[in-house]
Image (cartoon, rainbow, N blue to C red):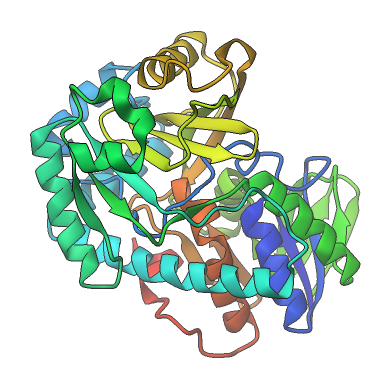
Length: 415
């Protein structure tokens, strides 16, 4: 089957890999000059299979006014009167109910561990891929007793489903990562996830795209998608800046541009931008070697080759790529306080990207109202984590096979 994929981030490229592997004739259309140059470019690098907890949590309901007023908080919501924002926030608040959290966590957890399995299989088939891949687990750090108690409850819930997480005391955290010595006076404890991993998503995406090209996948870079043309319940062609292209099936994997392309088709996709930032810092001998997440500041630390990647901040409603000096300065100061000798901070490189968020933090995956249009979007902060699993599931659906995991919780019309 001739298939066109719209988008060449890590989700689009893994989708190309699996569809090509299944025998389909695949073309990828991307507005940038290469693969992985948007959200996949300098993200946190963590493959957080054990951390599929949705952003929507019951305790956020009381904090909502503060989140809309405190622009420089780790999590901020930029208020708008636009219908898109109001509709998305209403759906987000509905998913903040305590009854929704376990279901939202579990369905994405199952997809995450399926994705882990698929990534391992992919790497066995493509051993030449090199992207600073590490399988040494991840430690989630707590600096507040109440947050630590919440973390222990989440740990107990997820361990029922195979996460193998361990609750660590502050001293056990230090034993695992000695470079935490500078924050030992405020560190309460942590949760260690031995099955989590990390790697450079951009390098992976670039190299997998090159591999796909060698296998016959066609790429149209520097090509802007203008619209999808529909005849009744069938997408007949895609109109682009370089002409019109037809196919038997289309996969929408265009991150935050996806709702823009689906809207003229009469399909509402609750995917909203969540901006984040990262620092890439040349390492020293005192850099941490364990993947870490600071729960208090919503900041991650990943050891990726010769750089320490520090990523954080979440601005719901921001889709510009401007580098906000104050936010970057806050992140840089936090990194220096946590690991004073952990990097050559004077040579830090700054980046901003936009994550495509759904109200329940789970992707929109599978069929659409159009018989030959498929969705693989809305992975939020877990695009790298869920990429291989989502692509494998979608390939089964397109190929009219039964996916290996349930997909009802990822349908576009669940909201």
